[in-house]
Amino acid sequence: MQRLVTLVVVLVTLFLMHVGPVGPAFAKEVIKLGLVTIPGSAQNICAEKFKELLESRSDYEVKIFHSATLGTETEILQQIQMNSIQMGVITDGPFDVFVPEARVIGYPFLFADYQQVDKVLDGPPGQELLARLEKAWFKGLAFSENGFRNLTNNKRPVHTVDDVAGLKIRVMESALHKELWRLLGANPTPMGWPIFTELQQGTIDAQENPLSVIANYRLYEVQKYLTLTAHVYSAHIDVVNLKWFQGLPAADQELISKCMREAAAYQRNWNRTNEAGFLTKLKEAGMTVDEHPDLASFRSKVAPIKNMEIFQGQQVQELLQMFLKAAQ
Ligand code: EAX
Image (tube, rainbow, N blue to C red; front, side, top):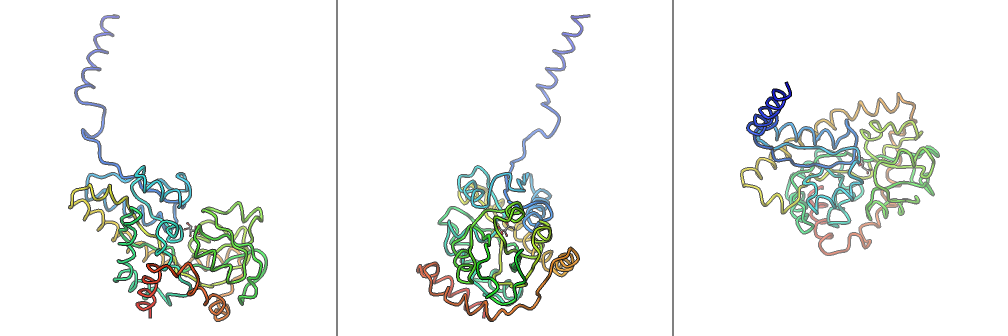
């Protein structure tokens, strides 16, 4: 009996050695993609679409690491630079530290509407910005979208810029956003995302984000007032590690770029189609919404930003001029 068992074990072992464990004979090449947001968020919609498209057209496998399991957006960008992960769908704000030109997207009140956004980002200025990411070893594939950002807070209704005075606001890890809120009269603290606990505990009074984020993160549970400031447009820049990308066969580079451009277009459309629904949801959840704030007061307070140091570097200034001209 014991001999028989031994024989069976040997035969099974030999069989397994021959055919390998169940599954495909060759391991697929895995691409690791990092993002900070939870499922249902704008970044996730884009990343999941990209995964679906690329996997259906190639042997690549895209592994998505979401919900900040890899840390903040700044930390994810560092991991892409080191090639410990290859890709990210990352909000424009945190790129600021790596490539200062990225801050031109968030120039206050730059874009009047989504049509202008598409014209500028899909046209020469946007493509120039993507090219500039290469000096920080990122290859920019496409822009997907967070959307126009709006202010929420827990202290008081905000109608004019004077109501912003002294609000303790969380801003993205970006010099631009810090300056912007300082000019508006608030007390800004840069922090990575997410920030639900900080809002809940009252470490901060306010934050600003597109409607999809406010809804998806249930910020209405900890923020009473919403003001449709649309003070900046916020893109995600969809990037890969430059060196890794350049090491791929040309056909694969083209396919990966194409899949990301398609995913980004799909996701921008998703955001725009659903925006009205997010607003309804926030009202139903009990937020007090100011849909027509005095934006002229915000614009005039923030106007000096153009002459501030963050936009004075020659390369940043050059790109800003390109963006301003194209957005007219
Ligand atoms: O997309 O940090 C931020 O405010 C971003 O908008 C956040 O990642 C949600």
